[in-house]
Image (cartoon, rainbow, N blue to C red; front, side, top):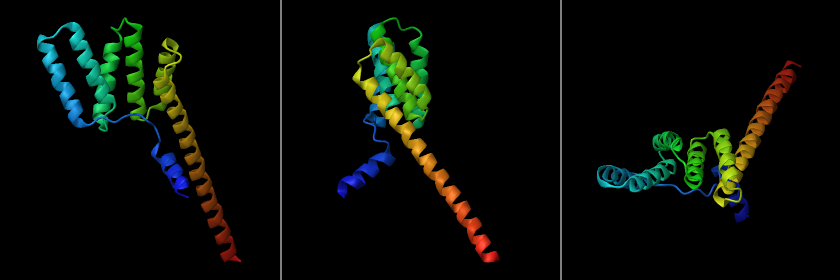
Length: 163
């Protein structure tokens, strides 16, 4: 019985395995980027910006996720390394997933998987998106069926009262 309740709870909570990031981590990464802007090499600046992007798209705050998406979209154009491009595309997919834009997230994951077809993180997120889309469809069908049932019941009750 306990397993049943855990299954139902997982169904409604989403069940993805993506980590969340606290605002303290985001603040720490922002300080790191500010320090790197003043006296660090281009590589150190780039790494600190990637860490901040990671923290932002994994944040519970929607405005942080949107900032992370904007940073990644702006920086992906100048990315030459396939590994860095794959990482940025994946983080963008995480950001879109967190903001509820599952179609953009899935499209980006397809691009990341073209670069690295066996990448477990991307495959796992893609499965979470497909599960979420399926779950949302099941919930939508349930809501529609309930509404139709209520309307039909209301009509039947009105007809019975008339007679």
